[in-house]
Image 1 (cartoon, rainbow, N blue to C red):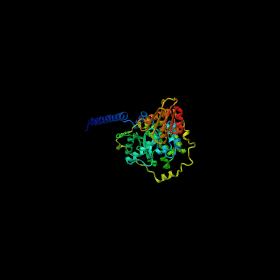
Image 2 (image 1 turned 90 degrees about the vertical axis):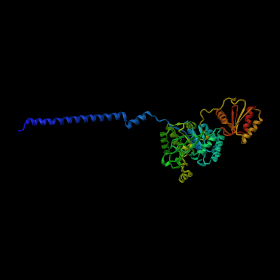
Image 3 (image 1 turned 60 degrees about the vertical axis):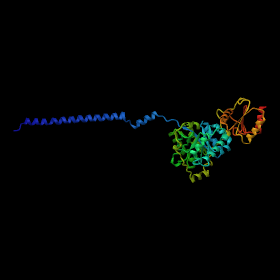
Length: 440
């Protein structure tokens, strides 16, 4: 006979171990879950921040600096668009640099000389072809012509040299160093960003001009002509200008002034860009002060991509976009606003009791002046353009006197004579008579 109590006891004994096991499993799962949750909280909040939080923090701690810009101009036809463009720049205190040949400068010396008083430097240029791979001897001869031809007009040392497409190579840099020209241009190597290279093996800096990145206009400089010749519009260029202004710290927008200073829709685009965007416009010297890369010349990249298709050239030759779309009121050189700070000397004794003459010893006007000063009973101080401090002394007096009389009102011709409160550029019978009246 079975014992009921024994059966119940056995049943009770078997159920207890099962209950304890479940409790232990539950406690273990709870502990593991707590550990996982705790680790997730620690990692989330102290180790790995969310990407959005990182971006927001970066945006609040970093402020984009105002980009620096320098306007580059190109002209080889006439000075109509150039004067319009420089006039607009001057009203906004924007410096510029004009890419021009010595022939163009000489042919328009009066206008060019005056425009240099409006914050415009000259980039001496060889426009017949890019200088790439031109032999050293040929480059030396041509760049020497460029330097002397431009300096003869402006009366100021040439600071920078380049060629068609802003092209240069190592021979260009060698020649520039030989001729004491501190800067050279180069076709763009870093997109719409302007870049200054400082070759370790030469005492010359290289300015890589902004180049277009947009595919349909690619390979041209960031220039109104580059868009116009590729059937682009002012709106197309404005988009790229705004993009460059947003992304880069330096840029060098370019205008062929027979487009940008002559066609109304292009001039309107430039004015809108200048007036509506924050750019720190700086001079050539200031642009070149900030070096981006210092390296041996052979490591400096070169861009030799400059394709102009027959379709582009046909568009240029037709001049179809120029007719009927001209700036309403083109201004002549005489219409330029008065230069701020321009002043003429008020004393009749700045150069003392003497006649100070700067010249190059050649040319009919210089020779006539030399004959004249041999005949007068008056102290004369001569300076030849071969003297090391010729330009320094001449520029100082030009700045003080402000303008000249005679053949040129803007110191455009040798000889340049200072006497009492008068300055004369060039020489003829009228100038001779006036000087004689002053010294008698």
